[in-house]
Each structure stands twice: as C-alpha cells, then as structure tokens.
Amino acid sequence: MKKSRLSLFKSTSMLISVVGIIMIIATIIVVAYVGFSVVNESITDEISSGNQYDDLAELRSQYSDLDQKFNSVKSTFYAGGDNDIQRYNDAKLELSRANSAIDNVQSALDSNKPSNEVDSRIDFAKEKLQAAREAYENL
Image (cartoon, rainbow, N blue to C red; front, side):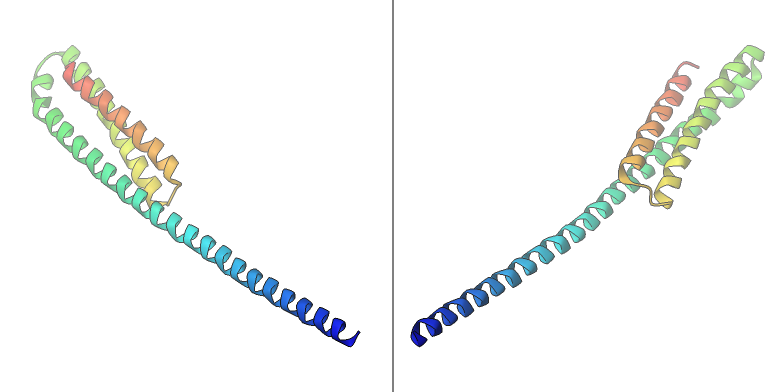
C-alpha cells in the first residue's frame, strides 16, 4: 500500500511539474507574440507616416509649380478687362483652397492623427489640387 501511494504521489508530482512547465512556456509565447505585435505595429505606423510625408512633399511641389504658372499669367489677366480679372481670381481661389487642404494635411501629420485620417486628408488635397489645375487650364 505504501508503494502505491508513493507511486501515485510521484506520478502526480510529475504531472504537476510538466503542466507547470507547459504553462510557463505558453506564457512566454503569449508575451513574445504581444511584444512582436506592438513592435510590428509601431514600425508599420512609422513607415505609413514616412509615406504620408512623401505624399505631402509631392503635394507641396505640385502646388508650387501651379502657383508659378498662375503668377506667370497674372499680368496678362490684370491687363484685360474686369471679366478676365474675375476669371483669374476665381481660378486663383481654387489654388488657395488647395493650399488650405495641403496645410490641413501638414496639421494632421504634426498632431499625429491616425493614418487613415491623414490618408483621407491627402486624398482631399489631391482633389483640390486637381480642381485648381483644371481651373488654370480653363483660363
């Protein structure tokens, strides 16, 4: 009888030890996975933010080119009649709206807004820049 109790105690102790080791390993795996997820998300956000800064630089470049085009034809329209001046000012207003949208993108990036919000602001700025480009072409 003593041997059977001793044998039962040994097997129970062994089982508890094995289960404990499995629990420790499982805990380490879970903590490693959570840590990896956090680091991966952080890196992804930084990459996304880098792409967004590249998009902002491209928008600013396109705006600058379009602004130079507007300035190069300004004297031609101001030498014309009131109708020409009004057409030029309406087109220039579209350019101002595009600049405001680009500044809005910069503001979102500076305040660390979520990536999807910054992307939507970039898309809006692209639309406004396209509208300004079309207004210039219609002059």
